[in-house]
Image (cartoon, rainbow, N blue to C red; front, side):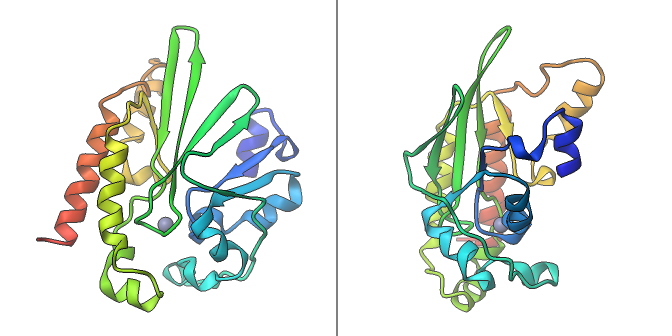
Length: 211
Ligand SMILES: [Zn+2]
């Protein structure tokens, strides 16, 4: 990631905010290292602050066969309806619990030469954290399963032109990438990808938890 920042012509010192989607170590696990390279403000949903600051046992590190001990301080706990302002871009924060208690989803608008486009990112798609064994073993409420469904229903209502995800493999993000590489710079602009993604999540949920 650091290499990628330099390749884009920036430096880690330019980063003003690190806005996490949720408190799992495959997303926020490197925060301490990033903090050492930047003056950035670290943000995460209020209900996932504990995981980052001192409850590493909830960070899913065991899934990757590691231990998460590099806790870090959150500068700004985010709540539903908050806005993070970066220059002239306003990032809207929506609390969408389910995958974790504090999962946040984000929306912002970019202004291109041919128009404005709304960008959306759902904070956490995985349903493996919603089985009884996982919830009970991690002191999490069984109501998170219902929250997951409520959250995806809520997000699906949003209009999104450009869909971003935390896990590239869980979306169709490689498809437009191929088109961009073949000369269509606007291939990521496709309002159909967002609702399709929620159909995919809904199907996955009902497969895992049949009625
Ligand atoms: Zn996760």
